[in-house]
Length: 376
Image 1 (cartoon, rainbow, N blue to C red):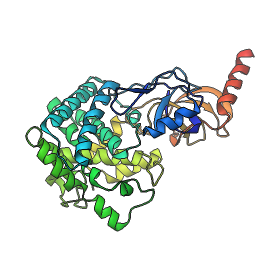
Image 2 (image 1 turned 90 degrees about the horizontal axis):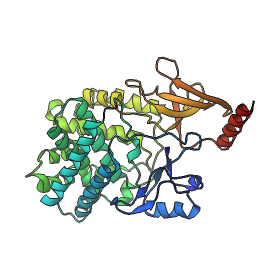
Image 3 (image 1 turned 60 degrees about the horizontal axis):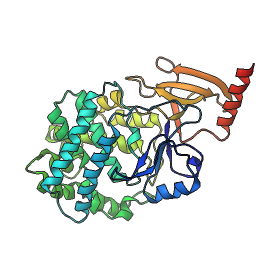
Image 4 (image 1 turned 90 degrees about the vertical axis):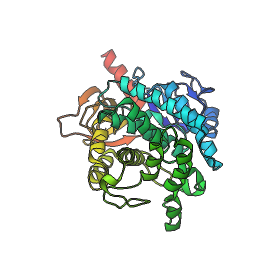
């Protein structure tokens, strides 16, 4: 199975997971359904831009999740409820705050029970509301960092709650700015830069009595260790430790994602940016935890190696973010070569590109090649 964009290219493929609506209650596409043309438009109208499908060349591959689907569904429902209130400039109620904290505790419990050294997290982003999905992703990444920094369960819940709310102030920013398919003007960027204080106003009132640290994270997640951040230009230890972790997770997720105004960065560029930011701007221990324990290139991604070979990531190597286990199926001219399982660790090879799909005609050529070999 692998994650693909919802477009005409998925017609004829089979869904590998049941797709639910945002509340997680109504199935929109059941597992095992062959996708018809009409389903593509229906999914996109519901705001779903990515789904999991069964890969034609690796039909038995299962991608393990760090957090249970039902945990994510409940967390999304709680966050959606709070975001809806925030759009009306209403702070979260105590009941909403408690429900979200309970959902975050379930996420923390799932993560603590997961023994994987390197976590697969790219499977979470499904919806086209970037701020909403980014918030869920940053919460998961932050809790993973906190786990490897040996925080207690209660600390992880408080960290995750602040992380999932970090961008709540953006609900007050005009959508035409947030979804602009180009770089922002100076004036537009200044409007966006107001979101930490706007978020503080909402969260400080709604969460103050049960989780006061959440509002601090919301206010400080764009501060940088060298004082170059905003809104208060804090430096070093002036920035709360939870805020420093969320800042690193925020940057890591943002540069891995495809945006309206740019394609997602290549894996090597992601690694370079995080390494350059660690220390001067971002907390070095948080960055190290992300790079060592979160997959830059998750299992299920189609990749091109630096020598041109083409294959699928089928396993991960701790401490080697650009050198996973890859099952190669084609050469640098996209000609089938038979399956070869490569462990890139300790070799001069690494992943050069991540592709959205197999090159045109490759699946048929690989199948013909396998049939020919089986008959010989």
